[in-house]
Length: 295
Image 1 (cartoon, rainbow, N blue to C red):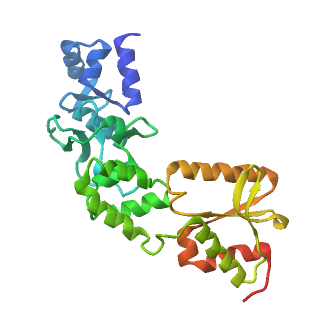
Image 2 (tube, rainbow, N blue to C red):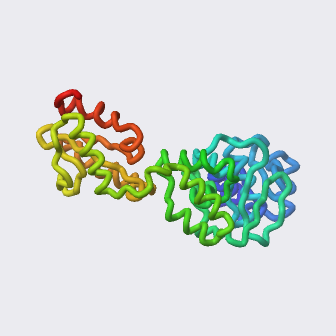
C-alpha cells in the first residue's frame, strides 16, 4: 500500500486528523510533509498534528487532533470526557486531556498531568475509537460542582460502577472524600436495603393494594425471577442498587428479559428508588394486569 493510501486510511479512522508521527510511519519524510502542507493537502491544526484534505474538522475530528497533539497514551478527560460519555453537556473552551506526568504542556489544550494515570486502566475508546478516560476515572477527575449531576446521570444510564470508582480512588486518595460524599448524596435513605428486604417492601405494597400475591424467587426459563404471577404470565424484577449498578448487570438484565418474551411472559422492572420513594407506581402499573380490589 502506498503512502497516500496509508495516510488516507489513518485519517479516515480519526475523523480527518493525523499526527506527524503517523505521517512518518506512513512513509512520508519531513520534506514530503512540508510539500503537502504547501500544496494544501495537509492543514496544521496543532504542532505536529494535521487535518488531511480540508482545514475544517468535525467536532469529533477536533477531539482526535487534540488527543493526538497530547502524545501517545493521552486520552480525552475531565469535563470533555464526561460529555463524550453523555454525563454532562458539551463544555465550552479548550479540550481536557489526561497525560502521564512526564508529558509536556501543549498550547490550546487543558493538559492534566497525573502520575497515577495508567492508560491501560484509565482509558477506553468510544465507538469511533477516540481515546477517552473511563467513566470511573472521569467521575473521579471531575470538579466537585460537576460531580453530582454526572453521578446522577451515570446511575440513570446504568454506567455507574461503584467498585470501579473505588479502584480509581485507591490511586487518588485525595479525591476520596469528595467522591464519597457525592455518592452518598445520591440516595441517602436507600442505603442498607438488602435484596430480601426489597422483596418484602414490594410484597407489602402488593398486599396493601389488595393485589393477588405472587410466587417469590421462582425459576422461569432457566433463571430465578423475583416475583411471578404464572396465570398472568407476568414477571416483576426488583433492581436493587448493589446488584444492578454496573454496565455488565444492565446488559445481563436485558438478556434475561429477552429470554422470557418468546415464551409469552411480560417483564416489568421496578428500581430500588421507585419502590422507596414512589410506591404508588408499582400498584398503578400492576393493577391493570392483575386486577384486585381497589383501596
